[in-house]
Image (cartoon, rainbow, N blue to C red):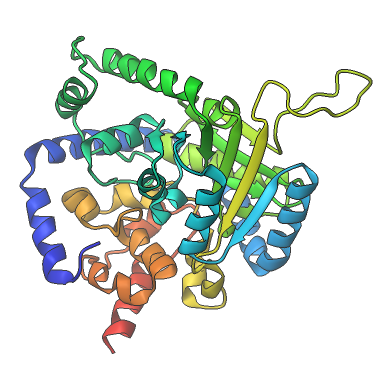
Length: 393
């Protein structure tokens, strides 16, 4: 994270002079606008957004009870559960489960980026690979994400080709399908040999003790089922009352990102098992042998009852980010690592403290265009302005 505003400003200027990054960003934004047009006048998605706003608001009012219920039902389902109050608690919990010298594969999870989990596990002697294509490209390039979902949108195809030739010794064609195919083969090999698979969650159903994910690549499903040990790491803000509620949250995120339903919807309620012989439950079957869930607080519960409580309604769709004239200009320079843009300022304040967010507040023009795109009705620009003025006073 930038130490102060002057360093942040320098980084922003450096980024705007990167022509290739700007090209990637412009192409991605054009694609996003085309996807957004699919949602115009879509009564179903509008109704779904209203339902999810209500679900998230009700969940936050009863968050302690729902987290306790989720933990109880997950444990009943055969899952080992840890409630991590701080970042250090979460890292220690996952580190203890994984151990050292393991091959670890990860699906996309913003919370694990918030924790710096991949780097932490790597420092303990583990080989860790991101299996989401965008996250994998960031991993091998050493660059930061530019968006919650389209994390590598600032990497144009020309740069991706150079990366694959340098890091994977790729010597195939320069078209995008061929490059994606090469990464598929590289990651498939790691997934099939992995000792541990780490996944995230779009939502957690308290009444069922279930994790719900949406995805298009299929990597999250493989990551959660092929390795013998499965660990889900997610924030307590993802907990909602029921499985139906969780489906609604997950589906809305998918629609808001791409304008279409997801390719895959994954529900994970425990390690694999079968009842095919006399209806007796036997574990494991063909999937993971063991499952752990780490529920991360890291400042979230402290936001309840404050103006920042609104932020916990965020479903990480990133619609606001691609509408932001500042973020689409300065890219990942305006971030604390895992969180970028105006909504990222607010998430930084929640997870790292308001003082850590202060330098980031100065890049927000408070135009509030982001608020027009937020399906959760979060007052992003207004809250960033309030945070900035409050900290200055």
